[in-house]
Length: 447
Image 1 (cartoon, one colour):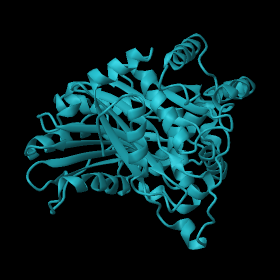
Image 2: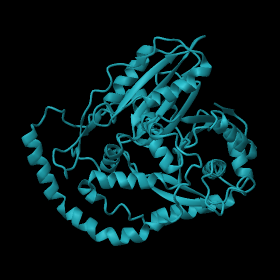
Image 3: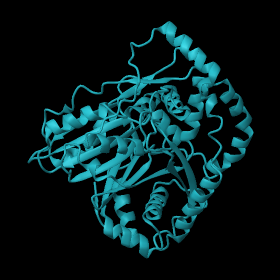
Image 4: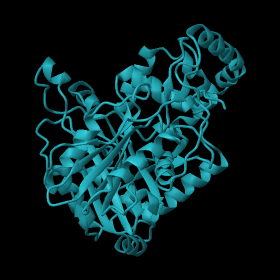
């Protein structure tokens, strides 16, 4: 089996190395009943025997293709020796997102927190380099069902450094035609680029002056909330507003963007919706493309028809003429780290809100120990290790990808935000989400 990283996966890896951090996908389950710990360990072992049983081995060549190698997974579930009340679980979830993971060394981990009065919270944190949202959902469902897959990757001792140099040099020579074709696509990709970037604009600078050089390197508090809404109410509201489940979610995202100051001068909020390209036997970490959409948030609480039509048009255009900005990706190994860092910093300054719709989840996803959890959510975030004053001050704040999905008849919406304003009140994000749900005639739990 070919174990070289897909070009997009190498982009994720190089971006993480350039900035010193990277995105993660975090799944969390909350049980009101006792967790079957042996069932949870079995789930952990099955994860390591499938799609997640790998890590990145960088090429010894500075311009080489990186490779996947096998990884046995964590030794065990990390169980907290303390018992905490249920109301402290959201803070615990954020703390777990802060624990460093690395696609080269330890690409994922699982932890459990017992809750006073019974039950426990379980969280799985995975490097986005190893798996995107759909890939992780597939891996989790397979592990719950006891399905394992031998990816055929070698281990870290399978080749010497000399052999690695020779093999990777041959791989570079083999991909020279791809690089030549990539150069030829640069001009067309540049023409397509406005389809992605014309709606973006630099972030507004925070009006507060940084508290000094030391403040630029201090961790910034991550504000996060998760809303759960009954799926029947969600569908009723979407239909009554002339929309779909997806357009209702995008409408909520647009209102949230406006509430947090992520609107253009004309009030428009710009959204990007990832679109999965994953096939049944796809081993890429990230099998994604996407579409962009500009939304006027003032009208979405009374009419979702425009968003619905915009999504339909964007997806139709994508199927008829795939976006070609990925054409230059074979040139990825040639990008110097300093250039990658500049590109990433520039990307942080563009205020486009990523909105990921995961649809109806496999019911198995909600059963890591073999029984249904009473609460489930998935979110995309960076390790909080990355949320330092410098990138936050430069970007004017970071709104991480909004995620939504449906499991066992309940719709969840996950929101994570790091503000450039040190005075951003802890409850402000929760209040904003509560108010926006009410604007759409929705009720649920927000925590």
